[in-house]
Image (tube, rainbow, N blue to C red):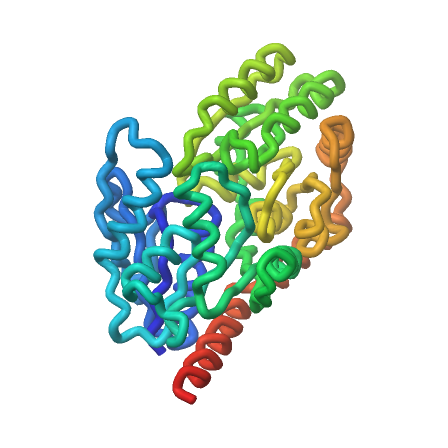
Amino acid sequence: MRVALLTYSTRPRGGVVHTLALAEALVDLGAEVDVWTLARGGDGGFFRAVDPRVGVRAVPFGEVPDEPVGPRILRSIAVLAAAFDAAGYDAVHAQDCISANAVLDAAGPRGPRGPAHAIRTIHHLDAFTTPELAACHERAVVAPRAHVCVSAAVAAEVERGWGIRPTVIPNGVDAARFAAAAGDGAARRAWADRLGPYVLAVGGIEPRKGTADLVEAMALVRRARPELALVVGGGETLFDYRGYREAVLARATELEVTPLILGPVDHGALPALVAQAAAFAFPSTKEGFGLAALEALAAGVPVVARNLPVLREVLGPAVRYASTPDELGDALLAAAGARDPAATERGRTLATGYTWAGAASAHLTLYARLIGASAG
């Protein structure tokens, strides 16, 4: 089976991480896979090495200084659509609204609703105010022939909002890589020497990641544990969150929290950064699955998550939950205390149960069903 997976960037965001891991798991099962992406700002390839059996089709996408979000979204769709060629693929599977619109445009004005080409994974749903992005989001939900969600909670949102029933295929977790980092004393010491003791959050400073609440919570944490720093990793994004970031950092200064902002962390260094954390904060206001939280559990790190249905579904009783900054602060203090070996083992067992091999097998079953339906 020949499969095209499409994503919007080469940089380490959740959907991109998912796309690469799925592609490699599919080739392990015998599929031929190409990953199509936009290579933004001169990127030569993805943020990490990709299995050489996976074809990488990186479409150059130059930066335009001070380009507003709306025109950048339209240009992203147009550039990827102009380059993408669906010929020869048995299944074409877009992982975000930009690449889904590009697939639809590349197929012509009617779009590929009939063939098995138009498959879309909806990782989570957003409410955009930028008109171009809102239109991109809507079309990428309603136009594809088939849909995948990585959790039942998001699938239920799609069904309630659009009457569409997606196939639910959970993510996998590279649990072994993060579990190994727990025993890598040298790599962990390097982070400890650089950062001291810390609570870790990943995904950058943006509204969806709940950073404002986390800053308030850390002010409570530091009253009891002043040695604990807040470390924020990641944050590569298409969107301009400067206003939110400035407001969060101003509030952090008032509260004397002062986050240590790492920006994107090298792929090889990330597991040890996670494993060394006293606790992992996951206060996102929207998520599709919670992959980063599961990676922390695999590394043996206690997790505090926002009390969301999707996170309750995926993470179950393996983490602490909080709904308010006060609750988040209390839960982080408890998490950063003495480790419970039984709880650590439960978290690792949960993370190990989500495999990319299982996810890839379920995807191949879906592709085969759609291909058969088209042939019929």
